[in-house]
Length: 637
View 1 (spheres, rainbow, N blue to C red):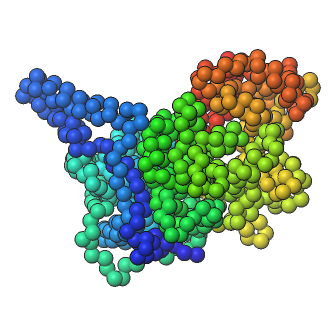
View 2: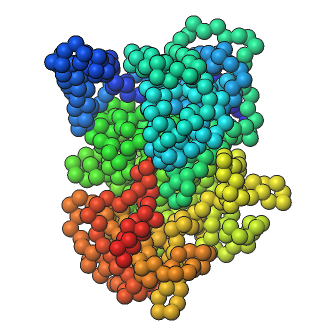
View 3: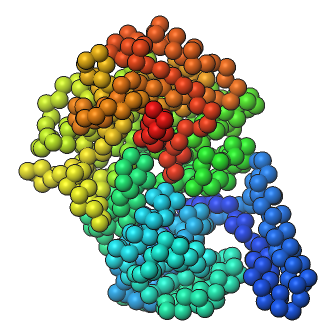
């Protein structure tokens, strides 16, 4: 199997590819005027000793500059200036990072990466770290919580911290706030200095004064004057070698640190290449609008151009659809990959304005949460027709998780051909070539292959695209990982599903979200996603999100150790302007849906329209936090 770094080097040395654009990215908006503003604010306390009026003036000027820049950035439809790297640029910058890291020390094996996720230099920096044979630790404290993040830092075996000076300063303050007395478990700190280095150098000197116990080094990503030793070559990975440690979101349980292997990354590249192969034209430099670093790697390894849209990937729910559509119009990508919330925002904007996505968009990819049939129909409706395109746009929805992606896939044309009613959950398609998929409950070892069609159980997967283990969590390794007698490693996804007659997988939600309804002396299993999809199917023009939860907690446990409740509650978030009421939904349930769930009678089913957006996960802003919603609506019961 080829190495990711070898694929990128291949494109950099290809005469027909090397000078092509690999990545387009918004030019960092924290410019030199903001740096001056920060300097003025920092100088205020010192100036106060000379003159109070002068200190106040400096403070006001500094704040005014920052506010002015923020207001400009906050304009609806604001498109920042863009820059780009060619494949040659990335190759040379990655080589520079590798050489500078190995000159500092060849003994370090694990590096904590503390850089902004939208930092332009992140991709060549990560590639350089891989070339040096180091493991990257990439954690998202905004997803897992800062206390958990600090606990992980104290337990992970880190050799070096690679950070921007600003980010390092923030993390050190975080350590003090959460009483993280040990501090960062390494003294060696490597600073990454990019093009916006006036601010970086300012905080570099601040950190040297405040945190003087650390050893400090500087890596200039743009330094091409390095002298690479002939003895230093790219690290040769094996499939099972760990390249990255990253976290799950913890939206359905405790967050975990996942081992990402080289084999997983390469398998992802191969799987996505296979999924979009029908749309690739070798003679053209095609592009993909992409909000995900993993997809950026895949896109570049395929020799395509990746474009970062003008949005904050840590706050996708606040994205500006006008700016997103302007980026589509400007760059004319044929692919786009993003979270369901981004497509929802685009759909809402198109419905409101009557505008459509600019051609020649052909393949839209969406990951992070289940996608309902209404989204498939809307995106096909709002993608412009183009006389040069002989086929309609496809929304492809890869199914997977941090521990394995993609596992299955399906596209719009197949979804629309299902005569879909929503009763059976969400069809996520067939497993990709790299994935072996079976069904079974956690207590059933070894996993059996004798499951009947349409029988719901937990989804287990195996393959090179699946993570082998967790870090610092032996309990989860025992619960979710299994090696069968043939030596094959399996991972329990924690998702529920079943297979139909065509070997398609139907997703029925998380095991932690299912519950038991105790009604009239009988107990019945409730799978929230299966019920929610019917309402989304019937009210696709009105319901933005909905959540089926249990109401009225009971003692004891139901089947498969699920919690018990007295009744079922449907919590609905409507699109702006929708006029339907809870009574309309209940009437529809009694007239059309009760036949599907005869056990969930009308006397134990209720509906409420939420006046606030439903709680969702912090990474994708799309996965519904049913456990938190259940706690909210049962706290006053």
